[in-house]
Amino acid sequence: MIVIANWKMNKNKTEVNLFMNEFSNKLNQIETLSLNKKNILFSPSFPFLSELQSSYSDKFSFVAQNCSHHKYGAYTGEVSVDMIKSININYVMIGHSERRIYFGESSEILIKKINLCLDNDITPIVCFGESIEERKSNNHLDAIKNQLNIVPLNNQNKLILAYEPIWSIGTGLVPSVNEIKEVHSFVKSFINAPILYGGSLNNKNCDEIFNIHEVDGGLVGGASLEPDSFISIITKANEIFKNSIKDVD
Ligand code: PEP
Image 1: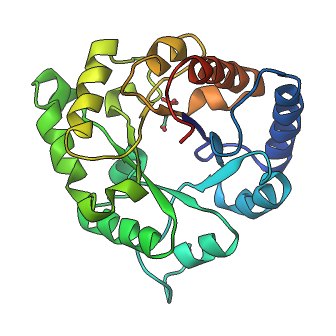
Image 2 (image 1 turned 90 degrees about the vertical axis):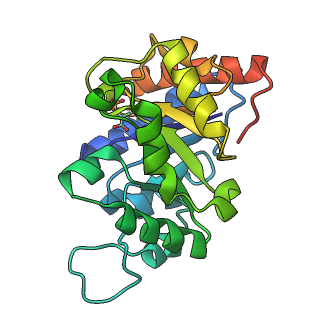
């Protein structure tokens, strides 16, 4: 069971530090917690990754929100996988729909990013999910199969996937249990990797979603920005993890 906080482009240094202090103090008070750094991951913006990794690597893991598809060189503003690895970060999010839509990241670019991560022993967290039009026209499974062509099947055991329906991200709309089950079972029929659910996941709906057998954790955006709200999600994940056979990772 893995739960990732995706902070996107939110929080400055003061806000990051305030959050981490409050979150880790409150988490320390939960005696029954069996989740650890393999299970609780944070994805802050680049400027804070190195410091957070140095201060909290015994408690949590950290995820870069992006990486360059180039190895190194004259690409102003880009951050390479090698740089990310050199500060001991072992996860990079790849293909979030916001990157595909706002930054035009194509399958060709995403394949390069995934391969660079794998070459550097970094776990790519590959996001996928259908648009509202694809869902309404019942073409969601075909669209998903297409998007997942970027996954190298010879390295499928080195990846984490995240099902994030585009229409659910930041909208408060969440697929039904059966809809999530359908997609996760479908993807598990051809890729052997843990699959997280993401899209308007919060402390009210996470219980039901984490209890779906095919869901291996969550990717949380908006509801990870406040310590109390993220702690309730972690607490639910912890209860479900303890009472089920879902593995730690
Ligand atoms: C996300 O964009 O990764 C996400 C899950 O966002 P939200 O939880 O805010 O829908």
